[in-house]
Image (cartoon, rainbow, N blue to C red):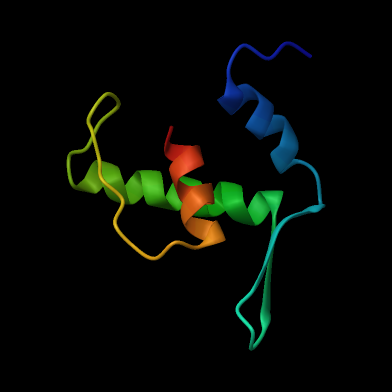
Length: 77
């Protein structure tokens, strides 16, 4: 299977049922599969387009330093 971009690679990973991220906040664990992350990324991208943000525009993420922030930033890049 040919992969020309990171998005191509990610699309292949979405088909896996494996866990992608486990975050423990000291109270409970949050578990996310590759598919969960992909669906969240697609939803986020949809919301960005509703604000007329398009490919090539610059966006600043401002929030806590958490593992899921890194996931969000890497998916947008």
